[in-house]
Structures are given as C-alpha cells and as structure tokens.
Image 1 (cartoon, rainbow, N blue to C red):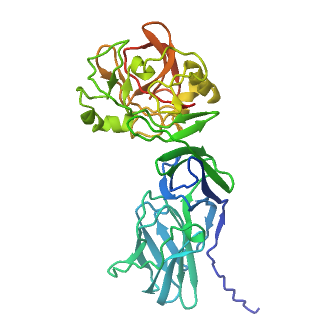
Image 2: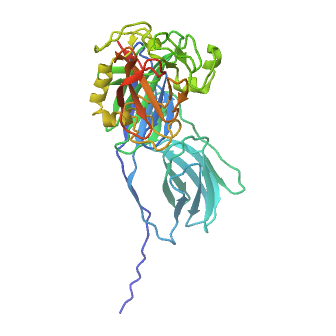
Image 3: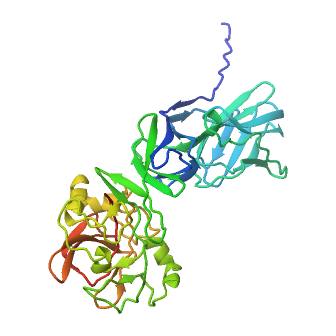
Length: 431
C-alpha cells in the first residue's frame, strides 16, 4: 500500500465583528465654534480630550478568536488589554530582518521599526499606547504575522516597542489635529455605555450625555452663564429644562459658620471660618463645591414663589433663576421619580463621594457633588456624604423647601423643613 504523506498547515486567524461609530461636533447658540471636547465614559471611567473639529471614532471589538498551534510561528502579547506596559513575544518561522508596524483601525501606520529576529522567540516591551484598538504587524521575507492589541490606558505617550538592550523606539507619524482621516481619535466603546461630552467654546461650556448607537453629529448649544464674580458655568439640558452643571460660586461676602440668620443674607465656604473673600476663594472646597448660602442670600431679597418657572432671579446669573419646588419636582418626574433621580444626577466614583455610593450613574450630566451643608448650630457637616440645594418655595417664616442627595441612597430627597438660616448650595435654571 502506498503511504500518503499529509502536511497540515496551522494558520492564525483573527476575526473581529465590530460596530464602530463616528461622532462629530458642531456648535450653535452663542457660538458656532467648538474649541475642544472632553469625553468621559461613565461606565469604564475612561476619558480623553480632543479638538472640536476632530472626529471621535468609537471602536467596538467583540467576538475575537485566535487559533494557534503551540509550535507554530506567531505573536503573543500579555497582558492584553495593555494598561501601561505589556510583553510581546514574537516567534518567526525563519530568522532574519523583519519590519514591525503598529496600525490603528483607520489603517494609519503609527509606528514602524526594523529588527533582526531569531527563530527561537524574541521578547519586546510595549508602552506608550493611547486608549484604542491597534493591529501589530510583523513582516519578514516570506511571512506576515499580525496580532490585535487593545489599550485601556487613560493616558498615552510615544509608542515604543523595545527589545532588551536595543533602546530603539521610532514613530513614523503622529495624528494630525485637523479634521478628516488624520483628525480621527479612537476610543474603545461597548454598546450601551453612557458617554458624557463637555463641549467648550471660549467661556461657554455645554454638557451632553449620550448612548451612541450610530454615526452622528452632536450639537452643543452654547449659552451664557456668568455670575457677578465673572465665573463661567457649564450647562446641561435635562428634559425641557436647562440647568447649571456646577454649583454656584458667587461670593460677594463671606462669614464663618457661627454667624447665621433667617432674614439677613449670609454666604459661606465649607471649612472656612473667616471674613476674607479672597482667602475663602483660595480654598479647595470653594473651587470644587462652590459656595453655601442661607435662604435669604439665595433669594437676594425676593419673596417666596411656587410658580414654574419661579420668576426669582435671586443670586443667579443674568438670564437664569432660582428654581421653585415645582421646578425641582418637574426634574424628579422627568427622571422617573424621587427614588432614582438622585443616582441619575450623582457623579460616579470616589473622587468626591465616600462609599457606599448607591445608584450613581450621572447619566444626566448634572454631576452632583457632596458639598455638605452649614447647620443651624453653627457647624459645617457632611462634605463627601451629602449635598442640598435651595428652592424659592418657603414653608413658613422658619423653613423653606430644599432637595438633597445622600451618598448611600439613589433618591433625590425633598423636604419643606430646611432651616432658612442653614447653608446650602445653589443650582440655577435657564429662564
């Protein structure tokens, strides 16, 4: 019987089924120019900043399969995804000169170098990869290997692929800052992730949250929101209302927590016990959480209002007003009820909130921070744990309605028993 010799060739196959989206940006309202856009993935925590004329390329990699024979040539990367550094082992079928190339998903070559590769496996250190998905290609005289690399690094640098002792890292081209193919910035994305976009145009800043599911153009409506101290605020549209996306910082005067009144306006900065405005403004609490106001200061001499809109400018910037209890209720209803509204307004993570942080998604872009309160007994309390905002609606001569969030609850709590002489934060609504 004739013997038949069969040679089996093992192949490396890599299949990527991905749905990628391209997001571009435009401006309207007070400005049609978008200078820059900060993108935050509220699920993964990844952030990046790009020019307003760049295109954001959301890359989704799913169903990745790699079939390798242990004795075959190939590329191994570990760990993959890479954060700061990874090791890459290259096993080539024939020793000799080879070209190593890094390619992004748009097909651009970001890095290229030439090395002599031994057949018995060579290790390289990978570093400097920005957030994104890449293809690493190794091409020799009679072979071509490739491997996909996912980077989850929050900050990148200059791409480097170094063999021990060679000290070589060469970049063939960098991304251009102009729009078009050379102005496309990659960001890994998983379907269903909530992205927070902050568009900036000069002094204007607008927040949009979105769950991308297709190519689109996001339009930032830029609105002036500048207080009497020339502080500029980001704004966000939630339902039919447009809110400030930060706490008010207007501080014409300041006193320590031991001074209070239900009739005389007083302004506070959490943790500061003095009367020097410049010193109070230099504190980290002021910069992060804004000022605290007793109800007379927040109202700026206006009478109580139950209307929607309230019609009370109060301490707010021109074109903005202090919300009534009815306007807070409108926000709560739009968000699906008081039991979940707080979580949808609350900033994610432990940068400011202390654990346990219950229900936080910040899917509205409101970014509620735990600035604490000034108690009627003359003490500051609960920074990191809670926050509260005034409304224009009084309960009686002693109390007014306020709304607040606790770190251990997803609710937006409302109460008519906010002492007018206490100190709370202020968020304003567009007229």
